[in-house]
Image 1: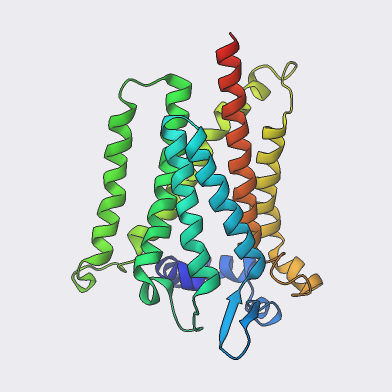
Image 2: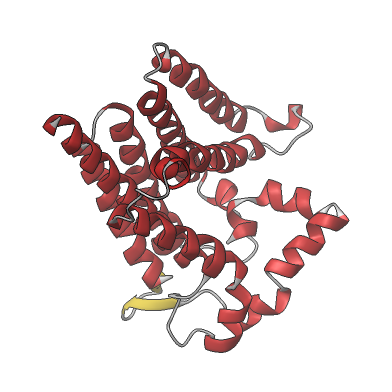
Length: 275
């Protein structure tokens, strides 16, 4: 999945010794053989398969969380959740419904849907960053910050669809980075406002459901989805279909995080209205 979705980044990592060792450590080659992509036939008599069925359910849940959050949350929070929902809808087709050969990459095989997925992920993360800044500082020029940053994403899309032979970088690289980097910034922005009391006033901090959901989400993504991926594969193989595979755990972890963020926003809005 990494090679298919992030071909330029994986190629860049594999071109360096440190990057190659990192990939080999986290995702050894034998894991691909031991835990291949799981597919189930969904139409007898036709070559119709549902790839990664548990991931399919995770993406449906993620789409529901995102679109429901878009409807009930304010301003940039709503935008972040709406983009997250659209990203999950595109993921349903890319990762589960449409076929992919081992030599294919998503940018080459399904460029339009892959663009929606990467672009909306970046927009969602950017929305979380700007919403967090607005909540923390109530910045006067927050909309300018958002639209100037958003222009970077649009530029990444243009680079992807222009004649990529004129550039010295892979055409998909800007959108791959637009997917990954804002996601890191989003965590750096959301965590301080959700867990500030834990460090500022630990004696009065209360662990709520939203905080626990965030922690469970991070554990699912970082510990189970990445750190223990190869161990889970060696122990369980595909006996639970794709439930314990890296991609499914990462999707599930993000669902937990977005649920936690949604509950935290609604809880704080309620307190604000009460006061």
